Amino acid sequence: MGKSSKDKRDAYYRLAKEQGWRARSAYKLLQIDEEFNLFEGVTRVVDLCAAPGSWSQVLSRILIRGEKFGRVAWEDQQARDKIAIHGGQAENEEKVSTVIEKAEPQMAKPNPRKNVKVVAIDMQPMSPLEGIITLKADITHPSTIPLLLRALDPDFDPSSTTAAHPVDLVLSDGAPDVTGLHDLDIYIQSQLLWAALNLALCVLKPGGKFVAKIFRGKDVDLLYAQLKLVFERVAVAKPRSSRASSIEAFVVCEGFCPPEGFKASLENPLGAGSSLPSKQVPLVPGPETSRTLREDAVTVLNLDQYEAESVQEHGAGVNAPKTESREQQPSGNDMRWIPAFLACGDLSAFDADATYHLPDNHVSLDPIQPPTAPPYKRALELRRKAGGAEGKTKGV
Image (cartoon, rainbow, N blue to C red; front, side, top):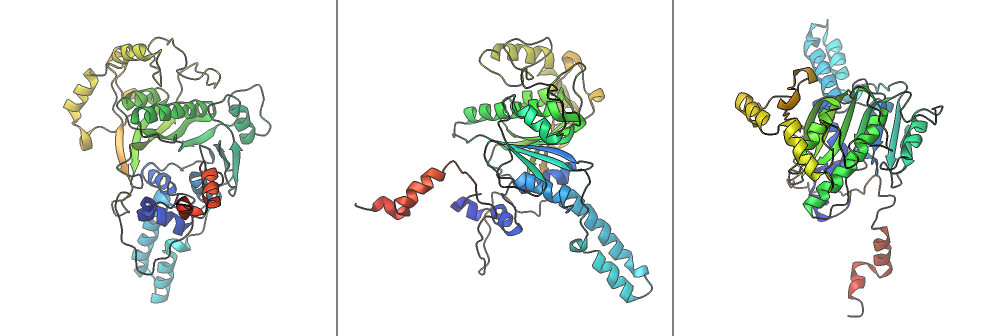
């Protein structure tokens, strides 16, 4: 969350500073929760690529502090408004006013959850958060699994590669430093997502959820089909706080159900290698598997037939069918599955691509949590040593 001119025009950037969020990305998770009710019954969470900690901050405030945001806050407000509307049945006006006061969302008492365990992992250092266990580790390395399992369960078996007490939800908001070369950025992002998914397979419980950032490229439908192999429901979400000009979106996977006999491991991750078993498509295409990918994609998924039949039967766009259970999906060589694409966030919310006029008495606030170790830290130090921006013109 920097101070560029684009950030200053961004309503969510200013709103995050005013409401105490570490970064504007907190609103992306909150708006996804409004649509999917992610945190219902959730007490054990792993947050991957967590720095600077905005998603972990949301988890801390909702699960540990018991504050209400998103869907839960909306449902709570609706219930309280209903009580206030029917408060006229009280015996006198004093009781009616008491009911209306209780209907205010600000009067809602926090309801912390019990036995909450949240682990945040990132290669960059992250400032501590209440109730959050932070690990500085690489999610692509097999040595991260023992560290994560020990953080989840201090008395875990070192010889085990799976969690004795699995987690309910795995989040990943990680993205590479974009280069501007879209094909390269999409490939690197897919590799990061692949690493997050393989780690999630090691710790998720049956029926668990997985949410991760993706870059929507020309071959992204293959990624959806791969996720559908291990999750019952897969959807694509575009929060309103995510700029429409950005190719980022978030894949929301629910109902974790690994194939029979599948054993997750980072030492032998899903889809790795140049050879593939029958009826399996590699998660991320590489130079050695590109031809196999194309052949299997046509043979196993039958990419053209089911899409044409689905569009002819249900239509496209808004009328496209929503995600269904695994039993209702076509099977065998006729399988061609199109995930639902959902825009998250109320239309009355701010538009991330719009510019809003600031009031005359507006005071710009500093970020609640500046970057602890930004990659440009050394450049800033050299710039200050040279006298700031004006130092570039010295001696000219």
